Length: 129
Image (spheres, rainbow, N blue to C red):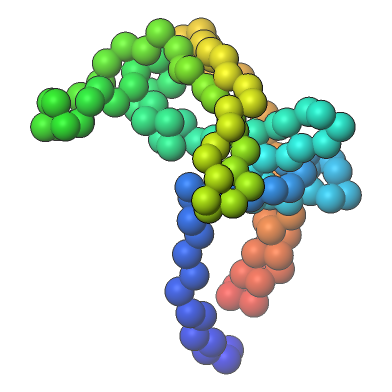
C-alpha cells in the first residue's frame, strides 16, 4: 500500500460552528454546535466549556485562583445569557438571559447510531485484512 503523510489538523473547541445537528436532515453537519431558524436557537455546548466536571452529580470546578487547585463543588444550576456583537468597537447587548438547572442521574439516557464516517473507515480498513 502507498504511504501518505497526513498533516496535523486541529479544531478550535471554543468556537461554535453553525449547522444542523439532526442526523436525519439532508443538511446534517456532525460538528454543528448551534442552529438558528424562525426565531428558535438550538445550541450544544460541551460540559467542559462550562467548567462542569461531573454533570451526573452536578459538580462544577470551584474557583481555581482561590483554591490554587481543581476542586469540585456542588452546582445549583447555571446562569446563561446570550448577546449580539456587531463589530469589534460595539459593546455586547444581552438579548436573553435565564437559568438552567438539571437533575442528577446515575445512568444517562442514550441511543447509539453509526455516523456517516463509520462507513468511510470501514471501507478504508478493508484493505488491511
